[in-house]
Image 1 (cartoon, rainbow over the protein chains, first blue to last red):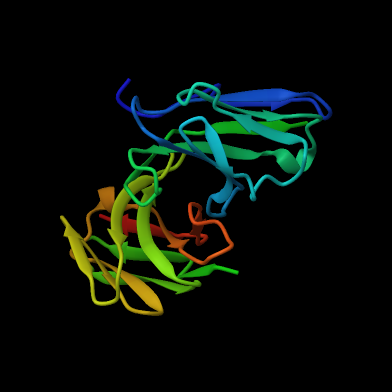
Image 2: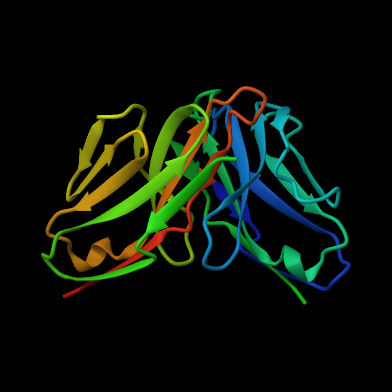
Length: 115
Length: 114
């Protein structure tokens, strides 16, 4: 595809349920980021991959959050035992270079609602 | 800790009425300052990257400038299609911290009325 693709677009989860959010970055992009965006706020950094290596996971809010990019392309963000405070839009972005300084392309996001 | 503050939170303009959005930042070693546009229900769309004080970049009706403490996004003769939330973000090069993440402000919601 031409852009970053995220699925599902919308996810409703019952409190305590596990969820998996998928990101298909632009082909060939080295850098991949996950961000969390609450309503009316700017995106907040969760984690960064350079190819398959997770170089920074300092933004993951708890050990319930886990991300992987096993083959250096598709990435999955998993949230275990979801809580209401996890409700947000989860954005994935990819960029061509390894430093993250080049233009980052964002997907449309997955809106997660925990009920 | 890196901080980004955007003002105003919301701005309403008439079509053709030029104005500026402000982004104030504190960061340990700025690597880059980014401007994004975000439409409702969509991900942010890249506009500009600025790397050093004094740098300016232009794209259609938008012009971004950078000083050591803040950045401005100037909008000249805006049109209704410029209505969106404009986000500012910084990437720091501070040793010991994350050199990859973008720290975003809360954004300025711009509405341009016809």
